[in-house]
Length: 212
Image (cartoon, rainbow, N blue to C red):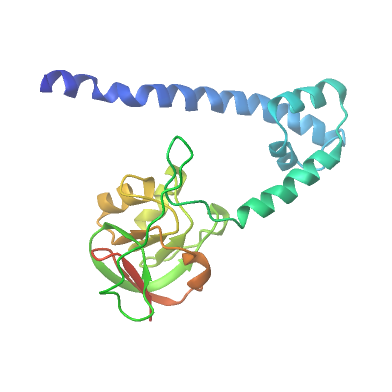
């Protein structure tokens, strides 16, 4: 049985590879259409296409017409949703599970979170919300909302991780353990409470962050 599992466990990732591979091809084709719409003045910029459904985009390509109120409305909605904090845990039935961290042993002023990679580290915090702003130096501590696979190259430079969203098996937690980086996730409002370039201490064993 173990030999069978070893042989076939890699196939678990194959469907993801297939989807991502084909989505990239589809996106390239769509972006060619979008570039033509920008050149013809139908779209102001290519990023505006991200606020349309695939059906709406097909209609714009067919007619060369777009009601820009749709784009403006969705941009406003995006900014509104961006300010909201989603629940930490929600079941498939839509039930929100709430709870609080144990705070008995927390140092005064410390921010509680979920410990996902052990160790204690001090350093300069870099509060980064997008990859475009990711200008890191060796030894920085990354503070962000969440990470995904595109953020993996940053882990070579950092020496600690703090995120607002995550769990034991989310991307940032797994990569932090692989690199041996102290990490605390699910720290509420971390990107707002921690200022860029502040010195902080990340306690990845106990699950809290201190501003020094």
